[in-house]
Image (tube, rainbow over all chains, first blue to last red):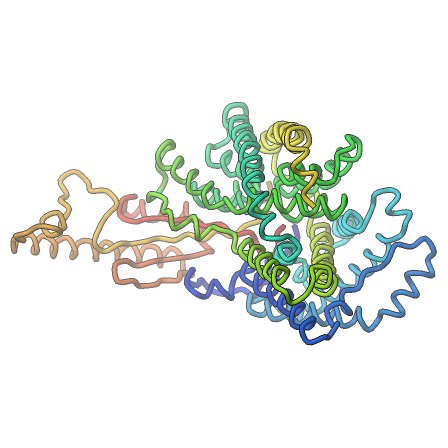
Length: 451
Length: 122
């Protein structure tokens, strides 16, 4: 991780909570911008303007180098409009989030240029033949740059992995019918819960019994490795009053393992000949964090991306508040009481609910209503509304994958000590085979038909 | 782990409730016990409440002073039944240690700790 805090304007202590959360939280802005894009797609289609489709550029697969050059040359206006479109939307959000917008302008310009380059190279048929498509290529390019060169602060400002992936997830909602979310949600939740509980207990038990880690530290580590990555580690770390350094270590390890898994999972899926649907579901339980999981699933195909999202967002992310409530209860009833503890409040479940998941559901509902109405046939809506959203979603994911690479320094991530690393690795050894068994063997038929 | 390799921001939130404490120590008597849902409230019960509030509010003010002396950067918000002190730049362990050094105990405040990922962290 880089010196990212410097890109955030320093302020003195401010009060938390209240309506200001609607405009001073990254989650909220991912929802606002995601829904804005969904509504713009509908409005432009409604007035007969193809602006959204025009800016939704995608380099076609090629074998001759002249082809992408011709494509870029003929679409230069669209690419510039796409750049301005994202720049304006993101600048509004980051201004509200107190980010240095001047630095963001410079950083995003570089990030966008690199994204175009990566998407062009990733469309080369040689890269496709070796399964190094755009997501993995973006990650590798980012990792090479950040581990060999010093990333300047102005570039760090634009590396907002969480923001880009949340925006992508909100846009992903528009591509999934709401009925599918309801139908697959219960299966995803059941499967994810079995794996999360087994993984949590493995990491916690290994951490406390074998490596004598502090209970709170082990719980924070276990939450990060089993529930939903960094978000879970910080939420449970706060709920059990873990020390700041322990939470920082848990975050570093979760990121390190997540990045390693981006390469291991697609490789294992390829070797084991797993179909895309079950593969996405497996990644959904095996990957710790949303952004790396998206990279691993996107390296397979669109169906894997969908089943991954159903498993990770609907089956795991949504329930972070409930997990924290349980951990806070365990912390004050089973462990020694620590510093002015109070009973956990059920209201905290809502406070910890990841709000971008609401955006994901809302965009799914909007498009489902549009499709169910008689305004246009599903084919027309698909071509004129959903496809442009998919193209913009994919750009948001390229920003995400590049940001993961550009903000991950292995030297820093690996400096957490071997005991916590061993504990979290124990969880991976339980999680991976159990996830494979449930997604690929037991629930194979279910995940195969989710398209 | 290198101490400067931080990946999260810690927010410590101290709640000081006026009318109640989390636990009552031996010899202490909850002042509202003879007031709330009591059909015939005795004047002495109100005097007890007065004595309790005098002591309680003074203790809260003292705790605030101790914390403010130990660290400058606090957001202090007043509510009808409590004072909330929040900071992101003073570790909660250090804040609690300062309170304890000055004779205050766990049951006189409620502490909640929130972590957020450092801006830009994956």
